[in-house]
Image 1: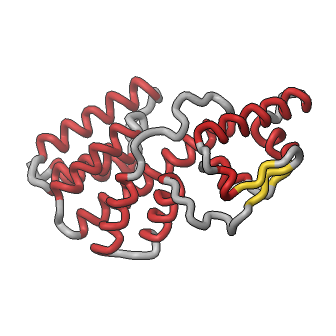
Image 2: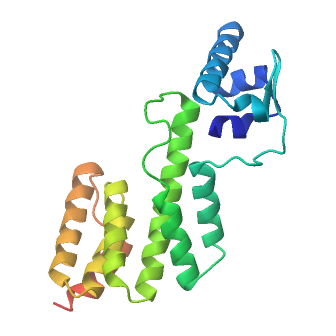
Length: 212
């Protein structure tokens, strides 16, 4: 469904070039034909909204009309939350993040699918980070801790999630856990990047280490 929403009103050759840029034209068009067959199989009602011809894929209705996908809802919710603040943004971010239950097309290995997966992972991580910030502003440290843990799970080799985790632990009153999060971050950086913590991470650590 997401694929159809992205590519409606598109020539088959354009679809082939987008999904299989390094494949010979004949094989790429065969791949498009097979993909459209799969689309009809998984979405039997596709003919109600799309006209699929030998040359083109076209909308029969206004693009997006009456069609809901979790990817669209997630991206729109996160974007709308960016224009809000306080409790309204928190509610919308939480609702949107609940829609993200894993990678888009996890079994896919094509470049276009991997690019979408990276895009959505990055947007989820950014949304989690903003949600943690907002929850800390509201002094909801238990919830901030929960979402900062999700950040670490989503990006265990990035520093920012550990900074958020340190903040959440310390503000919740558990400075020992904040120090443990810092130690885990230091070990991760040495193992994965052969690098020390950044000044930003050291600053967060110093801010809360003195509270112990």
